[in-house]
Every structure is written in structure tokens, then in C-alpha cells.
Image 1 (cartoon, one colour):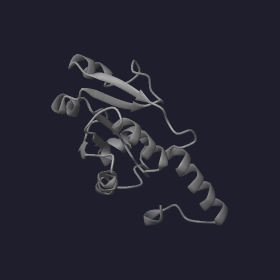
Image 2 (cartoon, one colour):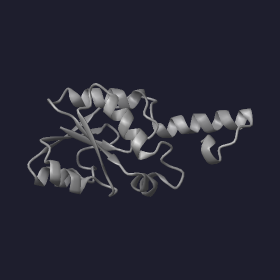
Image 3 (cartoon, helix red, strand yellow):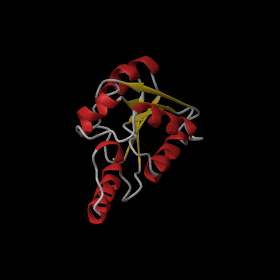
Length: 145
């Protein structure tokens, strides 16, 4: 089983999602977008956590069997390498909307969509941190972000 994502500021929603993904098979491999790939997808201020930190945190989760990373905006090349039976994504996608879904199907795999934890997202978390810092007069520049 394989899943992928940015996994910036890993939170309870990520943990729930990965636990559900793990229930679909024996081994869970997580592909993580490189820092440059995250910037391409999410904008110049992201990621907040560098790739090495994101890989370390994910690897420490009991439900994750292995982690790797990829440079491209989509994991197509990685999927072609690992040939997962099941590619798991969160419920903010449908199997038909998923950019890499056609590659998974072409290789004989299935796409599974699992539910998301309501109200849990990195973007929401960042917005809450920004709001708090602005109320408290904090600085978002440099290393303080």
C-alpha cells in the first residue's frame, strides 16, 4: 500500500488518515513531496517543516512501515517504481480527480479514498497560528515561523 503527500506540520488528521490507510493492507509506504515540490504546490512560504524533519516524524509513526520522497509535483514516477497494489488518498479527492490515479490503474493497482478528520488541515493550522501571532504581535519572519 502506498500514499503520498506534503505532510507539512503533521497533525492528528494526518495520523488518522495514515492509520486508516494502514488498515487496508500489510505494509504502508509513504511518499513525501520534496521541499521544492511543496513550494510548487502550496506556495513560496511552504513547507514549514523541512523534508528531513517530515520524513523523521512520519518514520516514527507505528503505522508507517517506510518513507521515501520525490521531487515531482505528483508521485507518478515513484508509483511506477514501487508498483503499489493500493494507492490511498484522503477524502478531499475522488479516485477520478486524483492526478496519479490513471498511472495506478494503468499499472493494475486500485485507488482507495479514506475519510478526513473534519476540521483538521495544515492550512487551517497555519491560519490559526498566523491569527494568534498577529493578535499577540508576533513576528512570522525568519526562523520564528
